Length: 347
Image (tube, rainbow, N blue to C red; front, side, top):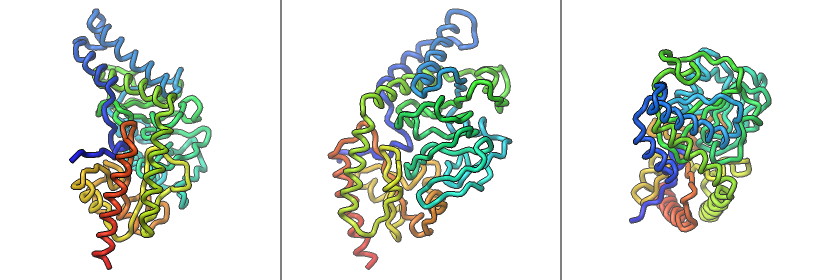
């Protein structure tokens, strides 16, 4: 049985360009803070990656501070600030915000004080894309970066979190992108690396992979790769809509990430669907990977006004550049067979 990976929002497949950069970085032994030739070689790799990410993210002139990922980035950008947030945010953001921003049934967040708020650019579960207000304090751009043509310098936000493994880089490396001149106290103190905002010896291997992945992702966007992925997502959605009258398609008429499809069949647990499709050879998820396995419905769908039965039955399918039309049609056929059997048992 050939498996089909449809969980790219949890983590994307490692890009060949990132793998090559990682291998090259493994041969550089110097510490980026050392002044000798070996140290300078390591430092050059870090700065090359910083420039690659700045170019891919439209962040020329901004400060890019490397972290272990978007979760640490959220802590760095949000800790102690008491910013306003919404329950549709990722748990890493919800941990640091006051959840008092309203969310409507379309997943749109209402922001009344942008300079005191944190709002995601795109939701990892539903794929719904937000319209960011000018002067926003922080945005979580983790899912959008590499999939949508976005530019930090045009977002109007002071800071953004991004992560490598969502766009084909290695796990365990991310960054906070900061509008130059913005005050951001360090959470990890020590040697003063990363412009004094995040101490600790830089993860040269991960950073090199991140830079290469970001550059390759930008080329994919320019070459229309994600337009093709959106077409496949739509083919899948149409096939599922045609095959069932019992399923709710979340955000169907909203602007979404080109690869994301979230749907719920009330009464059929999302975790059960994930296990059944796994046995059938398909990797999907029941929401954010960080929340999978928790015995509760999706907080995102609950915030949008869906009932608990619907929130507990949601699954997410997220495609990637490697996904084919055969993959999505095979999935649709397999899922519809399982859905039919579920309805027969429930009758």
